[in-house]
Image (cartoon, helix red, strand yellow):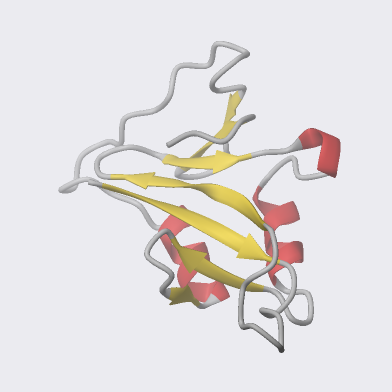
Length: 114
């Protein structure tokens, strides 16, 4: 089972209620390190950059089911991962799909993935 997470930089449209364009934060997959989507061309290179973005006024996070996620909960999803007390699977660093392992329970993935 897996879940994708998205950041919206501003609240939905006041007239129609539709959300504006989102940024893919990453994917949580059972038994794996969190796949943190990094976007170097937008200055998003690690978890600290994401944390700064979701702390901005008006920004909010949802999962792929449109459930709102609080920033502290998102941080927990990324950093407090475990798999039945055993080690998490890490993505293989190949320079394409995974460029590095994060400082904790996340890997840096330079593209959106499903």
